[in-house]
Length: 356
Ligand SMILES: [Zn+2]
Image (tube, rainbow, N blue to C red; front, side, top):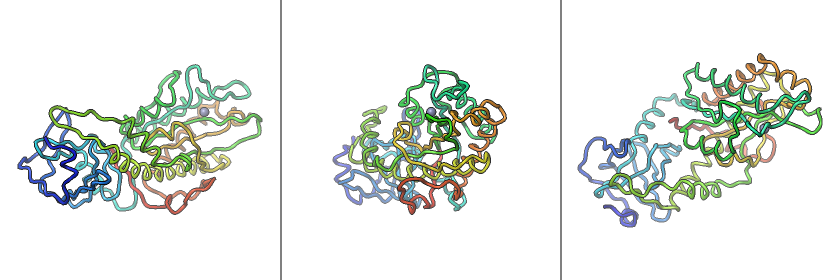
């Protein structure tokens, strides 16, 4: 068996295993990295390979790779067997998919996870006539689910009924879902009845990607041995690659928040309270592009009256669907100012997420 230390000691090695074709291990397909150019970064503990003309960075024990600078979830980790490196076939499939996407910054949106805020014993904010936030968010999320499914998008939802779901469970569902993005839906509340308008949150800049990566790497410990193939873990490698992944995820999250905010303002005529950044658990602990929409103030008498109406809930769902579509097409959002200090240059970069 190929040890991690031996592997990391190699520099500019040519992998010359004789195997051809796909290897199936534990229900997943792997492709031997045969004859490809490879170098090993000892310090970071990552492998740099050229696969099919694409520059890939892989970290043993971690299922996110960078392909031409983009984070790609391979749905599996690199394995070693009989001195041969096995790369999850997902990396090739995704390379093929992204290759077909027109070079206009669009994003293949295959799967979405929706998170209706609150539920069960947690009613969320209450309106002047006691309408409950948890009921409004669920109704809007279910309507949005129907709209997205009609467009061929697979939808996962954190709750389908009036049940209490802890915040970490919501993120954990998102991280396991393989979704392209996570959208949490909430109603705003204020002590006075005057506050109104819509706003959308992305994760605060005060939580660094390195901090999140360390936490994520500690949480996502893979199995050490899978069906006779070993899966070596290097914490440093995981953190390095995950930190890069999270930086990309952060940019995408901000684009997502802006797209949603823009459509809420445009389609509903809501007062634009802007895109804001905040240290919210569901955004901090979720590793797919994530945003939280505050669809209006339930504590505002007029807004509460609208929230009571099925037509308005449908309209909100349509606005959110339009926002997701806008994000998926990579359209730059100009409505929805960003509050707080956000490095604007990085948010306007063209970006692409690998769909799963
Ligand atoms: Zn809420």
